[in-house]
Length: 461
Image 1 (tube, helix red, strand yellow):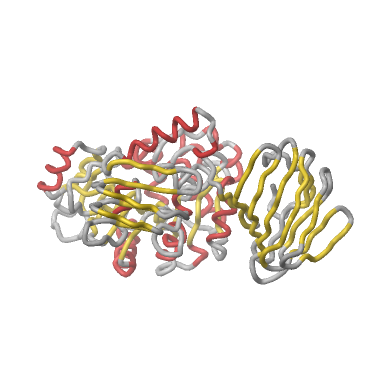
Image 2 (image 1 turned 90 degrees about the vertical axis):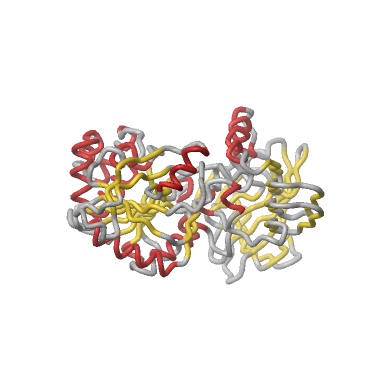
C-alpha cells in the first residue's frame, strides 16, 4: 500500500497564525511537531518511508523538505487544480516511479489533522487496505459526538454491502454539505450520519474505472506519461475528488471510527485540543485572566490580560491581533479577503519568513532602513547575490559565519561584524553544527525582497 499526503493547501482559516505563505499544515499548534510531521509519523507506523508520497506545490517545496528530511518522494503540483487532479498525478507517479500495478491500494490523507491514539489509526489503516482490494472506494467517517455545523456529513446505510451488517463498513447513501443546527441535531439522533474525515482509500484499478465513468477528461489525461501530465496539468478540470468521484460512485463505503479526530478547520475547533482550566479557558503564552470563561487566548510575545470575557477567541501574533466571539471565527476569511483586496502583507506573509536555508524576522523598519534577525541553519547557505538599491551590515550574535564579500572570504564570530556595500556580490554560510544568528541592518532607497540578483543558488531559485 502507498500513502499520498496532500500538503498543497493554502488555507487561511487560522489567520493570523496561518497565512498563504505559511499555511496550517506547517504550524506547530500541538506539541513541537508540525501537523504535517505528525501526519507522516502516523503513516510511518505502518509504512516505510519509500511508501509515502507528499503532494505539495513549488511555493512550499522547501518547507516540506525541511520538515520531512527522510521523505524522498515529494511531488510538486504545477498549479492548484483541487484534489482530483492532484490525486491522479500522484497515482501516475506511483505507477511510473514505483512500478505499481492496478491492484495496488492507495491511501489518501490530508496533512493538517490531529488524530489520537495512533494505535487505533494503525488498526483502521490496515483494515482500509483489505477493503480497498475488494474493489471498494473506502472513506473514513467520524462518529459525531455533538451537532456540528462546520463539517460535511456522510449518510450511511447501516447494512453492510453483503447484507450482514457484520463487516465494519457500510454503503454510502449520500454525502451531505455542512448542515444548519437543526439538521445537525437530527443527524446526531438518527445515528447513521458521520463526519467526513477527508481520508479514503482505493485500488488504482477501481479509481481508474470510476474516473472513466464519471470524469473521463481526467481519465484521458492519465494515459499520458507523468512528465506529460505535469506539462499539461493546467488542462485538468479544477474539481475536488468528492465532486469528481465520491458523490457519484456506487462503490463508495464508509468505515466508522471512534478515535479522536480534529481537522483544525477553525479557531473554534482548535479550542478543543488544548487543556482548559476550571473556567473552560485555553491559554497559550503569557496570559492573565479575571472573570473570563470558555475562551481561547493564544499569545505570542506579549502579556495578554482579559477581564469579564465569555466565549471569545483572542489570537496575537507579532503583526496582528484577532478578537472574535466563538462561533463567528469562520468569518476570518472575510478579513483575509479584505486584506488581500487592500494588498496588505498581513494576508500572506508573517513578520517571520521561512527560506530553504533558514528564516528571517523583521524587527523594525522605517524610511530608508530595515532591521532583521536572520537564522541560517547548519550546513546551509544563502545564495550568492547582490542588491542594487541597498547596503547591508551584519552582526553575528550566535555561532560563526563564513562570509563572501566581493573577492574576499572571511569568518566572523559572535560580536563581530561585516559590511556589504551596494551592488557587491555576497553570501552568508553556516559550515558549523549549530544555527548562525545575525542582526542585519539594511540601508537604501528600496528594501523589498525582489531587489535580489542571484548568481549561485543551491535551491534552484
